[in-house]
Image 1 (cartoon, rainbow, N blue to C red):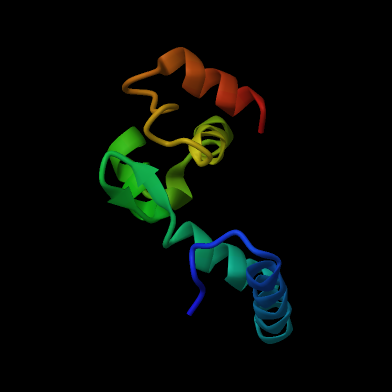
Image 2: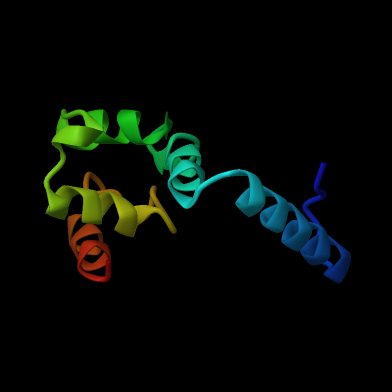
Length: 96
């Protein structure tokens, strides 16, 4: 298990783990695992929950603009929430 410390040792362990994951999984599988486990704000985890909460849709039904907004809010989902900060969410969408 990784510690939360920001050390050179931790970064080396992260690098080794990333290389092992990339050897075992295709990039699409890595992205899918990430999208299904990341926090999207408002107590929502995973892309299916985010699509439902923000757009009342399934992920496969999202328009490009909606998917871009979700990608854009990832760095700060509570702060960039379209419910709390519509302008910030639109700026985040535009940066994708």
